[in-house]
Image (cartoon, chains in turn red, orange, cyan):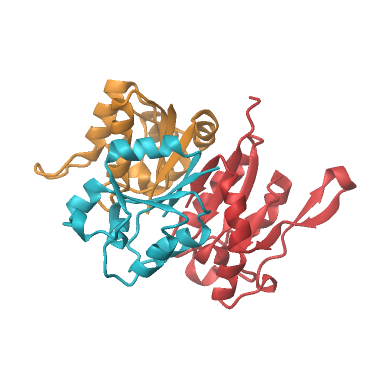
Length: 135
Length: 130
Length: 102
């Protein structure tokens, strides 16, 4: 299949309270095998998905936050976090997990997967997408 | 034009499945094609054949079945989401050692790749959810 | 590329509509469906925000969802265009992609 489309995953919901974050991640992982151009956006409460130090032992649910760290290995390397959403929640990028991907074309140099962008920048990125999957 | 439709909520609790149905029906009546309808999250509950809504209410599962029958629609239920929520076809019930299955005819259970394929193949993909 | 944004939440319950307005690019369209249609009514706290976005975005509201909720056409903010499901289908074709704000 030669068609490469721009897939855009919109994450606007916090983890654990509802299942959307987890099942969205499952789509991203399966979708990675199709070698499309994948971008993830974290907007509104979606930014909470990327919080450091998640520990779910006390609620009896699976902690799926380590899965975000594996995304780089699936060539999912563009995770855009909306600056306005972060700031509205009193967060900075230091509150988020340190997600990296290795560039095989650049001697496996480590790059940051998370990029904090303004809503205007994110609006530009979003407007270029072919398929928008919102959760 | 070719559409893909994703439904993320079950019937009755949320309007999503109804909206998706009305959209699909309008698109088909205008001569467009629906490449696939993909049921995800609680949307898999649209595919149970065991629901018995009251006589004076709509039967969402039946609406999809009839639309699928008339237009040869591909109604796909996500296997991972379905397993979590107890939506099984006969093969899956046997494989998991369950005593019954409950999928309605006209629906089929398959993987998430079917959703990505719909995104690739369809000219437009619309998501209906909560 | 022009995008069609759909919003299905009441703006008095969730921030969905607000986020849509923040991230919809000039020239794109917003279609209010399901509980999203309440934001199309005049004299609400959301009206001012919509009026100021009227110049850059085109606003539509799904008629069948208005009717179901007892909203009459004369209760809408000026500039809103009413479409039925056929119109919804047409809008999704006229735009390059569809983003559902859930």
